[in-house]
Length: 233
Image (cartoon, rainbow, N blue to C red; front, side, top):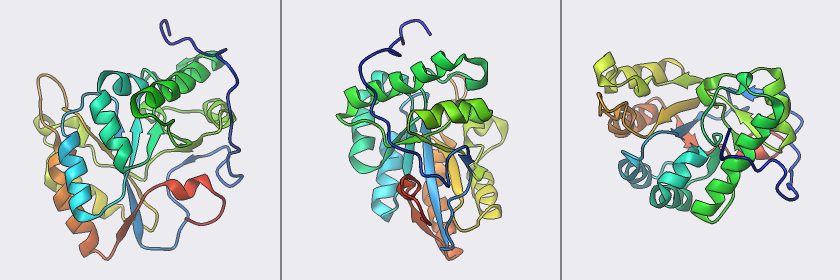
């Protein structure tokens, strides 16, 4: 964690995690309404950010972005554009597997990411945290809760991050999401290209079709802000 170290930096203002979400890595928003939450992880490159924001804006769809501190530091313009339009959650500083870290390192990752996002966007992330790779255990959740964050997983992963070279395209993305539709479903998507060898941005290109398909099934959209207050979203 060299270069991250801010564990002891000043007083850290914590917000209490609502009791119904404490100790959990939330995979579905508790609601009876036919709405889903689109979420985008920003941990790699900034490819596709403009297209995603354009599609969401054109369709009037809210979303939530989970941003690493490394992304915010490297792609400040993209981070600011995202934060102006949608809530930005914390996705750690350097995207490590949290179960492999000591408690102090986990805290360092969370706080360093918050400082980096605030430096880039002018505001701290909302108190929502997503574990890198979805790797988590009870101790990880407790440590992140202690920093005032609700832990947010997903109901369905589009697998768009695997890229076109792995056979994942718009049809796969849409089929996976529609097959998992329930009230309060949380959809995991990504910005950024798959790799230098595979420059595809599958989630980005699939987004307009996915929005139309979800609406055709009678569902609307929501952000994850409701997880920050007790009670149904």
